[in-house]
Length: 139
Image: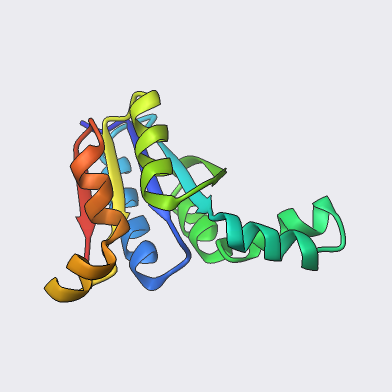
């Protein structure tokens, strides 16, 4: 089964649904661990740093976005670690997943229609095309 799961989140409703699915899968395997990653893009990071009152305040502000997700993981007794990575979301998730050994990557879908996805691209689509481990995309 899946004992090491990478969960890519962005704080959206879709990433909460992805969290629910990751927990379901992790609960099937004893000692399963979910590594939760959130990628901070450069523009957001600059804004956060400029408006924070210090490093501790910055960390607290970032973690507040994921309180409900962390509570859900804790209430289901799932071992997890939360990591903040820096860069462009798609390539950063792919790089992290490919450099580490995960049994599964779980990611939420933004629900773009075909035209939007063709023009804008989607993080989940970019990840699926380049990551080496199995991927579960949650709608």
